[in-house]
Structure formats: C-alpha cells, structure tokens
Length: 190
Image (cartoon, rainbow, N blue to C red; front, side):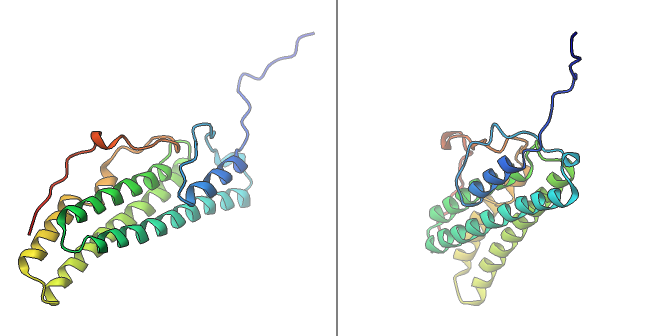
C-alpha cells in the first residue's frame, strides 16, 4: 500500500532561527541569513507572532542606535574637512542600507515588511533633517557663510535618504557591493 504524499512541502515557522539571527544582527555582525526560511504569519499563534515582530523592531532599533552613535562620531570628527564629512555620510548610508535590507527582506510578510521599512525610512529622513538643521544653526554661531554652504552642499550631495531609493529586496545575508562599484563622491573644499 502506497501512502499519499502531500504536494505542499511542510513549512515550519523558523521562529528560533530568525530570533538567533536577529540577536546577532542587532549587535552589528553580519551573520549568514541565506538559509532562513520565509515567515508566514499564519504559522504562528497571535502572541508568538507579536513577539517575533517585536524582535524585528528591537533588532532594528538596537542596530540604528549604534549606527546613529557611529555617524555622530564620524561627522563630529570631520570638523572642517569636507572630504572626511562626505566619507562619513557615505559610510553612514552603507550602514543604513544593511538595516533597510533587513526591514524590506522579501521573506518577511508584507504587513511587517511595510511597517519596518516605513520605520527605517522615517528615521533616515529625520536624520537628514537633523543634520541639515545642525549645519544651518552654525550660521547663528558665527561660522562663515562659505563654510556653512560647503557643508550643506556636501550633505545634500551625499544624502542619507539615498538609501530609500536603492533596491532592497535582497535576502538578509546580502552584503553591499565593493567600494569600487559605489558611485563617486562629490567633494567641495571651503
């Protein structure tokens, strides 16, 4: 007697695998996520799904807090060097590209993916606005108009929000292309 095979492959939720991945990822590492299975909300009880969604949000919040601190240190260290400031913005964008890639991972259900992507995009817009406001306030502190305009030009030529326009449906283990593939930077000297 032959047993009938179910034509649909069995799915398992993958909660533990994703939870471990998110914990490592939140701490700044780039664990291999290529083997993570897609998540389906219907595979989880309501409270389990809520915990998993909270894990995603928490991981993104921890990673972006570290990113913000690193970006702040790098832009502060740039002082009046527009090249260093532009480089800090480029590196900041690369750091947030990794965050946005997780938020928009195609293996996450659309509802959660949309909410996480919106969270990251709003953060990027807020950071861009804060940086521009900070540079504008330098006028009131007596910095030269030429310096402020050069800094604004560098900031606007290397916007953090450029990450939003990048394609981002890559799996969580994807890494950005090598530096030689990156677009050229615009550098303005005051």
